[in-house]
Length: 201
Image 1 (cartoon, rainbow, N blue to C red):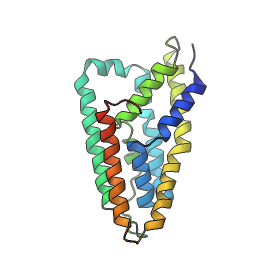
Image 2: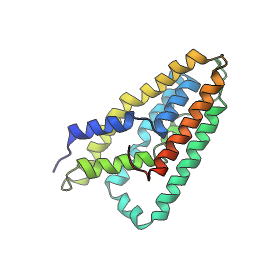
Image 3: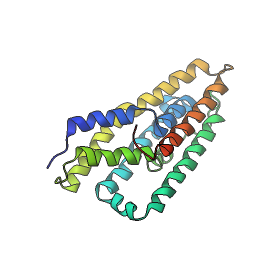
């Protein structure tokens, strides 16, 4: 009864740190709002993964397997939500005080439940690094704590990078190109996951 903790943490860091819908949204929010104003959104994104780790740990995937239409609906809800985030990013200005209302904790909470990559990486964590004989509570708590620890380190990095990137182009002719480019990357990241069948990279 065990979790291969070292291997799991390496896997989690690679998955959480790689480009995907959540990290593109973090990058864009950091660029649009600045690092400090993006922190509630960062916290929401990190905590939002817990909303799917615990149900998966206690068997929700077996239920969804019986109702594939529910999972299909989740995928298209993801497309709609990520596209809405991208739309907001594309029309955001970086000039000081012109960033508009910053997406907060609640907006961040919705990112991972509507992110097919998150579902795929969590399912892989349970099937690839957890001994089947491990009690559900121990396995789920370990996976949840491991992902949260990695997210608390890596998610702020994406927001900070967005902030630094924006500071170099705010008020210049490159500002609009940056925001539109970030919006396109957000949409492409979720479409890439969907076209790949929700598999982890």
